[in-house]
Image: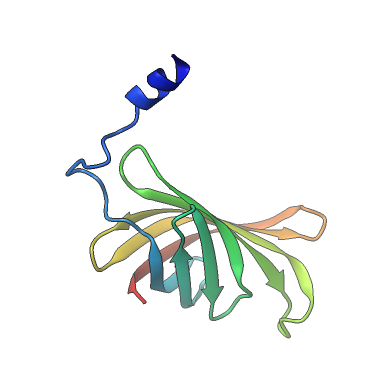
Length: 133
């Protein structure tokens, strides 16, 4: 009985209102309020995981899901390295809300920097724009 109730509230898999799937690799332009900019390849997998490979950062991982308003929300955690990229000095934790179209994506969100003790040291806005890689 509980299974039937849970299934009844799921949206239709064939709805014309479904957003385009984010699954696949997307090449992004990244702009922050630090200010800084760069590029990132973000790959969304069928299992809900995300891999981020940035031009100015080490690779990061996270997860994604479809939100109630048919946008894609995703979170990524990236090791924060010093300028040599050899010593980890903390983490970057980002949360984004994205609007995927057939051949483009735009996303906005917030990222936070944490030191090795887990203390938040900075928060900043991030904007992503991109296309399939």
